Amino acid sequence: MKRKIPFHIMTASILCILVIVLVVVLTMIFSQAREAEPIYPGKGVTDVRMLSDWFPKLKGTNGDTEVYILDSGVKGSSMLVLGGTHPNEPAGVMTAIMLIEYCQPESGVLFVIPRANNSAFTCTDPQEAAPMKYYIDTDNGTRWFRFGSRATNPTDQWPDSEVYVHASSGQQLSGSETRNLNRAYPGREDGNFTEKIAFGLTELIKRENIQITVDLHEASPEYTTVNAIVAHEKALDLANLTLWMVEDSMKITVEASPTNLHGLSHRELGDSTNTLALLMETANASQGRLHGRMDSDLVVTGKDKFYTRAYGYGALNVDYPADGISLSERCARHITCVKEFCSMYEGEAGLISLGNLPSYDEIIDQGIGHFLKDPQ
Amino acid sequence: MLMYVYLAIVAFILLLVVVNMFRKRKNIFYQIDAALVMVTLILRLLLVK
Image (tube, rainbow over all chains, first blue to last red; front, side, top):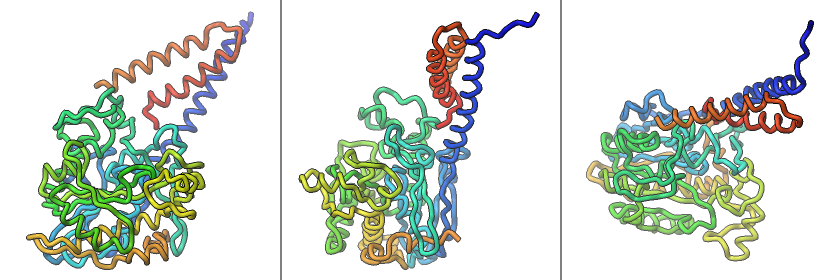
């Protein structure tokens, strides 16, 4: 006699099949986030290495990342530019990519890391409705770029501790900062995943005797440290000289790195290496708490009606025009200051000159896309 | 090491949810609830994010 399958077993089985289908579809969508945007090295790039060349423990992990070397062949100083410490701050990433694709140094060596925290590019921050990509028009087509998270992907480092204790100082921070690369410096060889990435970057700076390190960031327009250069005390002179050179083009301030705030690049890299450690912040509406719909347009145009209103109420720390603060303008700030850091630096190892870079006004007028390689 | 402990906990909870789903219930919405919980647990177990 044929036995009838109970109704609740049948429905549970059907639901299990649906769950499996849903998991497969979601896995395919999420795995797209692991695909990195293409970068087309320009004439200035002489070598592409991996961070694991300086710290082999990173090899084969999501923490390993590309290091682009632009060696002029003329004796001089060296500079490291870090983009993508926080992949939800796209001006840093785009500035690094523009340097790789467009810059041709005339003296010294330029090291560029566009995805400093490569793992954080593979996810977005929870509950932010952030896009996985944003799009920029070049002269010959549209290119896409990855929008990531502020912190390392939890699948690479999990779970977070309740309290994050910075190893070398004992400073206590919120547990969510455990995966923040810019709270992990100078890093630890046997530390957690993010501390290992920080250690790899510190090793690169030490072994290559990098004279200037610039960590490119963005902050929300209502944040206190924005449109600013934050400098370690050893780099304050360089930051102030740069300020004098660029203040005709843009409003910008110089802030001294707090001595009691540990784990940040401008503090720890300056303390633990010989490099002049600098960090830059531009105003990015997509990062703030006040913006409306979050999409690629907001990331690229920086235009948001709620921020315009907040500016009218005097709630912001930067000038916020009605047409927003575009990615081109934010990159123009970064590029102009990076160029001036080099111009103003007079080190024993010699000068460093970043040739073939557009001016602030040229980037604003023609857009960042004009200075990126065509996707073809 | 701690991650594997958490994954073991996730796997155990997932097992309980599946077992509970197949138990006799009068209301199908209990089973739909369980299915939705399973999706997030499986994704976490597979380290998909």
